[in-house]
Image (cartoon, rainbow, N blue to C red):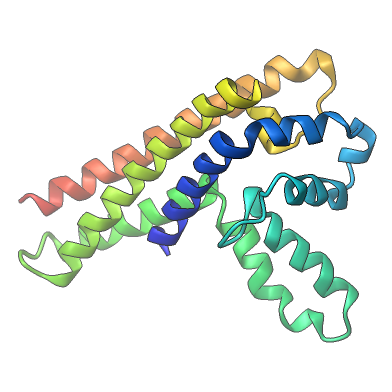
Length: 193
């Protein structure tokens, strides 16, 4: 699951570079009132090519599927796994959960040398660090290509709250990067015993 998550982060970076200009152009034609409806956000992502594998920009494919499930007779059968993905997949939820579980596993195995668990823990720490670097790259690319990280997230923000919202996003990203690097360092310290 971690490999798929990092793959999606890389795909999002590629989308920002290739289609970021298209996205900004399409988004500028839509009013803030229209962007408050999620169907409009999905349409904008779709027009800009943001519905890529596995889940698209900002989980747009999953969110569209959730909307379809709510409108269908047996859709409720698919709703629980889709809601699980929606709330566990974003990096701010995925990274701390993966880091915490990997740290607990590392501490409980006490650095058993040569084991499969040790190799998986090393892979987990590499993925956590790489994912955090991808989030940092996303931040930089969003500023370069889109003009703002808020634009990428399709937030509709009052002009007087734009700066504080942007800073809170950056601070949250920095905190997650710090926590995942601490987890990776802890795992590596046990792995290198």
